[in-house]
Image (cartoon, rainbow, N blue to C red; front, side):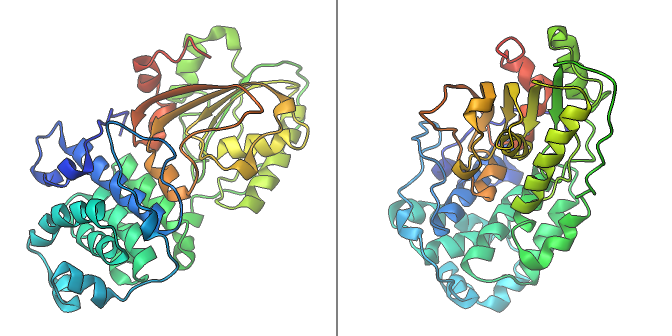
Length: 371
């Protein structure tokens, strides 16, 4: 599915409307707003801050009380929801989905692990797969991994809705017993071969589990749009392809591959466009003395331990959406913060991790001319 501009809805209002019952033009934003709140609650349960800033359009409650290392039993969450475990498994009536309104307000007014767990259980019954996926990701952290959670995530991975599939992949990647599902999207790092060419052209790379995508390669939509809109960048005739694996060890190996690949391609100080953890690979390469001119980060999950060696980068342009759902699941920060380097920030739109490499997104927000 191509770029879709989502609009934030205050969660206390978003949960008063069932995504399936909303007007067609509003339903995606209703579901995405519900999912963002659920994943923000999940982050708080894990002891993470979902965001360090106050978002006027999407106000979040004080969730610090949710931080803890204990799970509760499914039955305890069900009691708070007002059903038995058996009824929860058999529930087909929309009443549980309607309970989300009450539970969301409870999390605002009196946050507790029971209210959060019950909210996640209710969310898994949602008719919208994005909400169900966010609920399943949260339930994994408050109760326990069980068939319902597995089935919800496995079904969502196969969704034709890009955001649903991407969020499900991000959730599964953090659940040990389910890793085999996402391993199919990881490739063996291609070998680097020397070319008799010297240049400092621009290069594009992908993010986690996305090596087989086409958008970043010659003939792909973003590649072709960048080549057309910014011919002065002299876009390289090959794009960098790495394993796409979700592990620090793999990214370190891919960073070494990137450094070697750039050298073999004759790229001494290239411009580099990187989506998601492709940015992490680039950062780790700068720690190995690779030099980059313009580093354009698109939806990078902010982790201080993976900051680049700023002495090896001339410019950093940070392009991102607010409350990126995949970044919320990843555990990364939503904003690049450092006093060691002037980051050029461009924050537009909401929720959709992949929109930052969509040509239409760049058109809408005038990004071609700011890089």
